[in-house]
Image (spheres, rainbow, N blue to C red):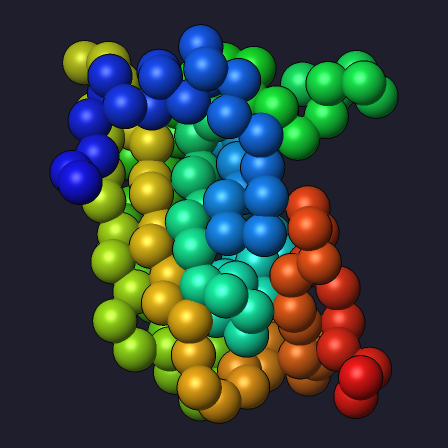
Length: 149
């Protein structure tokens, strides 16, 4: 199924909760800092090291405790600052590189606001985050370091 603005809005209005194979990230999750790069690769490698799935950058979750992990609203990313190519370059630092990640771009407004959808395949090898030298795996709603279990 192709990604559209209507499909994204349907996740919000349908209150589709995050799960092992679905994660929402607001615009503040992407930035050109070491912390942002570490988090980006952590999230992608955790998804690949688990069941695979979808990470949507540009949908904010609720902050309230009882509503966490539910999509609140669109939170567009400025494509002039964070480009698809930049995302690919950072993600490609995973060791070993994760093959076949698909990045879809949905335009939200006329000022460069977009949502990036990363479709991450399940991998058959473990991928390491080179920024902190850790291996991650998804557990329900979060990416956690693997401890050999």
